[in-house]
Image (cartoon, rainbow, N blue to C red; front, top):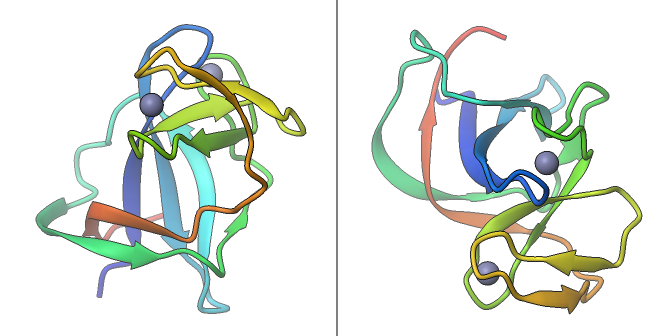
Length: 121
Ligand SMILES: [Zn+2]
Ligand SMILES: [Zn+2]
């Protein structure tokens, strides 16, 4: 079964793209485990894209933006893309649209068109 997936995130400070990795944990929840600059070969990420429900996910202690160290990210409602964010910050700038805004207070509950796969932790 698929036990991991990656979502594309853009770094707010460097405008560089990285990938946030989620692993399916033993307690049946997706865990945001780490940020990587490329999807490692051998993770067998492929196949069709699908949506994934992350309403019950949690963030692991090792997760951070690989470029600037931010430990959170925000989904821009208008474009639906992700930008890294300093934890606890309420003001954000979408690194894709270069639009600024305030956080709505909502949480990200799902991703569309995610490519899932399987691999080792
Ligand atoms: Zn960053
Ligand atoms: Zn945007």
